Length: 540
Image: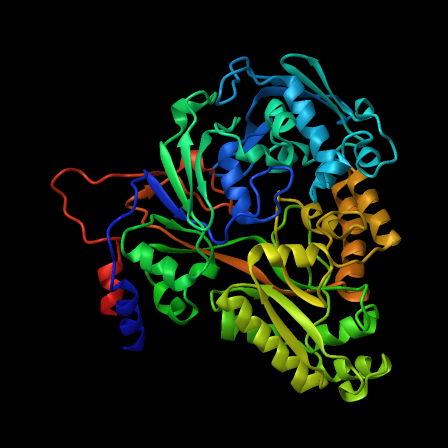
């Protein structure tokens, strides 16, 4: 009865539909940026994926790479040389040809230290890519990407890379407008009109209100772009998201974080709430540059004191699985080693060995997390577990999304909520994250042995030998050194009415290209009462 009342309150006060769009999507936090070389989070990626494109793109059904700006490619017998053949009808949304030189510029820009791309490591597979990014060489012409002519890109890799075509579909490798960037510098995204290489143009970006995307008529595949106008709303309050959805003011809501936790059980019974597994892990970052978290025994003690089963049963409640390792189960050609489990007695013993028996003398420390009721509940649960089991006190700091990302990047924290969604279906997308120079390694942890194992694994063509090398590296990560504390593997939840919205397919990367999504309009004379299942849910 309480759930019924809560749903009723959320629906009450539904107002008039705002400015019309073919499709309206609630996307979570306000994007940090729309620069493909800079972005790091899913809210940004979903928008950028509509504005720009790479040599390949991801298939909406399978999330596997298919031709994008490149119509085809050749791979040398040794797997180290890729020759991409661009489509001859590529044009920027503002006019003017997209050429092989634009591809080379975009990749070199992402590697340029001045760009400060945290994903620059995606291009380390290019010959001299890492050396250029780290300043060991200054001449960009020595990097293994060149334009052979207007329509041909030559890429030379350090070693065979099974997922290189997947990387070509990732935003860091998207093609961006050189002339606009050189004219406006860091403010290039403010240019209007903004040249785009993807299926949509940026029609409007009103901070904390909406992003409007408009179909790019010059896009090479414009005939198959299904929606003309898409509004993307930056809303990260679950009650607001659900209210707008039930009012019919939005068509799709991404992310489980935008489902009110108290209503999760009843909402998951609705046909328009969809649950699925994908490659994602929720974990905690330790700032290993700060005492006492520079001691692996302290990190191990905190990990052993966390009852992860309690978190997924009490808080997340959508079928998540507790995680003792980083790489999700089901990742292609890989099985993870087990990390640390739940052992309070051993946790207390390790903390005492580190010099803090029963928590005495252990300094107060902070835990940062971005705004979300679920993140807050997990933080409170961890706070209580560590106080009860180890006698240590943790302060909670809830931060707005952009502030949170900056605090992580600057190592301005003790412990931080973290997560990683696979960029492609391979263990490397998780494990490479914690190599010493990776821009997304926000723990301060550097380990030469770990780096060497990851490098050796990626040079290995034998899948079983590669797996064993990755397993040795992950053992360091989740059992021996523990710069992170894995909590659980994600279960995704999004909500949309399949009778109204088409083009969204469950896939292991939870990637849904905007150009494939469209709304089915009702036939004239057919009356509706809001989203399918709304009346049924209110009667339960």
